[in-house]
Amino acid sequence: MAENIRLNKYLSDIGVCSRRAADRLAQEGKITVNGKAAQPGMRVTPEDDIRVEGKPVRREERKVYLVLNKPRGIVCTAEKREKNNIIDYLNYPLRVYPVGRLDKDSEGLILLTNDGAIVNGMMRARNRHEKEYQVKVDRAFDREFLAHMARGVPILETVTRPCRIRRTGSDTFEIILTQGLNRQIRRMCEALGYRVVRLKRVRIMNIRLGSLPCGKWRELTLEELRTLKAQIGEKTE
Image 1 (cartoon, rainbow, N blue to C red):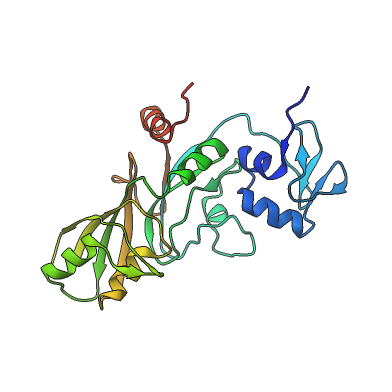
Image 2 (cartoon, rainbow, N blue to C red):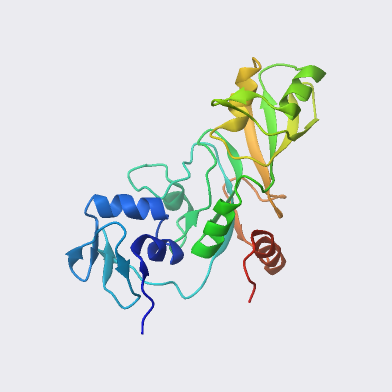
């Protein structure tokens, strides 16, 4: 008997879109199952004729794991209405989508995949795993700025989690977060009277950007993938 699972989980697992996006598309009447309008929360099987915006969806046979050095100006969304969306920019032959976000004005490492299990595992761990950034602000700062950033800054009706930070110049620093608040570094700096003029993510967990040129992508190595799966509790084959 074919597996019977929720529509949003199925679409997420096969790399079509996130669960939230699947529910939204269903509510907008853009998904059909066996010729009938889909309902959020309904259950489906891989044998069902499932179409998103009129196009049939199928489980990809090959799992893809990509590292992109995202340029500034590219938006981390699969939404086609956004002209600068990351999917059109990447133009990869298989359907993939970004894991998490990196805001439009920032650059650097973003992961893309069609493996829903990896995405769900990383999103469950998003408030625990390390992300490393290189930051430049609009003027020189003192040691108190670094100390305040490290111990926590009040933003978004909370105080940011203590983090590791290291000066790299009079107006530049490297910072490692274990938290994923919206535009967190920019808001932290603004709260202390500074404006971020450049922000680049160089690491997510065990994945490093390295010397990958801006705008280029590469596949994860087998060792990177094995370590990543171990860190989020996913079984390796």
